[in-house]
Amino acid sequence: MVGSSLALALQNSGLRIALVEAQDLLEHHQPGFDDRGIALSYGSQRIFETMQLWSQLADKATAIHGIHISDRGHFGVTRLRAKAEKVPALGQVLTAKQLGIQLNQALHRHASLTILTPLQVRAIRQTDTSVDVQLSDGQHFTTKLLVGADGQFSTIRDLLGLTSWQREYQQTAITANVVAERAHQNWAYERFTENGPLALLPMSEGRCSLVWTVQSGEEKALLSSNEQQFAEQLQKAFGYRLGHFEKIGQRNSYPLGLMQTHQPVQSRVVLIGNAAHSLHPIAGQGFNLGLRDAAVLAELIASHPEDIGHPHVLDAYREWQQQDQDNVVNATDFLVKTFSNNSFLVGHGRSLGLALLNGLPKLKNHLAKTSMGLSGKQSRLSRGLPV
Image (cartoon, rainbow, N blue to C red; front, side, top):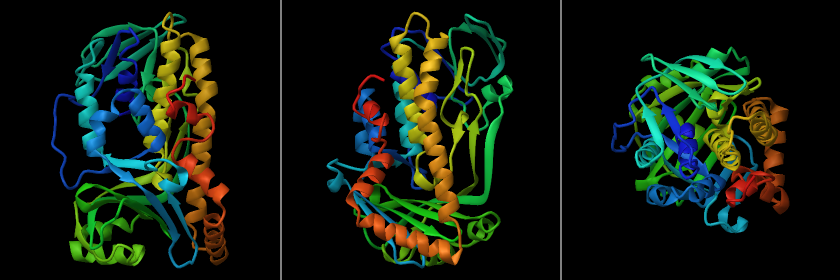
């Protein structure tokens, strides 16, 4: 989705663009009950507005009017409200499938885009002036700039022999769409437990998108349990703020860790999105950070159409976006280590911190702006300003 967003951000740049994708982009599936939810920050919504894509997404999204943050077994609670931040919503939630379908349809309306699918990059040869790319069907292309937006297990990263910093948390995320007894009223919930965070995001049709972090190995029993048993365990972890959980959709799981690529900017090659950094979902920042990667790169490319892969373009991207990436990676790692800890003293410290945060408007405002992608340099992108 990050690579598609970059291609669409450049649709009026006058550049010739090729998008290489391993999956068939022509398939359009209708969204169903079990679609995974994607949380878009308010800043990401503004980026899509600037790209003239939000009008196709708005009626499929559910607004987040408030965020309730709590710690299981402790008294501290923090509430963030869109009204207090003077924004229509803190973020929006839609399914990955809905977002993917809209991006795919927009790609096929892109007049200067060539879609090469289902194909993969097999070899890369870099020179001072261009990059030669060989595809899995034997085709060769020469480009001024190659962008690797091919996910956590990036082929481009492997072909370049790039190393990365990684941290394994020994945690697994269980995802599902659920329906609770009480209406979510457009509130998102982040509940920290001794095993990791549990998030519920508001969705359409009264559903909530669940991301439940457990210690690796514990997911097996939860995935194999029946719907009632799973709901009972979820109830113990989350509590009764939404009443009883009445319906549990299809459950999936994936291991959690943190990855950041060393030197993602190379000679006429740049990695963005999960190819450059893969995050724990604790703060819901993974796709939002990747979208900011794409927005910054698109702005710099459009400003230098004479040679989009020139070192000064990529140096400017590195200088701009490296700080954003480092800040989000470090903050995510800190949150995981602080809020996935069953120490008695740490637990009471967390509780006190949440209680104090709730009573300090300036700190709450800073937290809200950061989560919305509106802090510091990020705010220029969200307002459609050039970088």
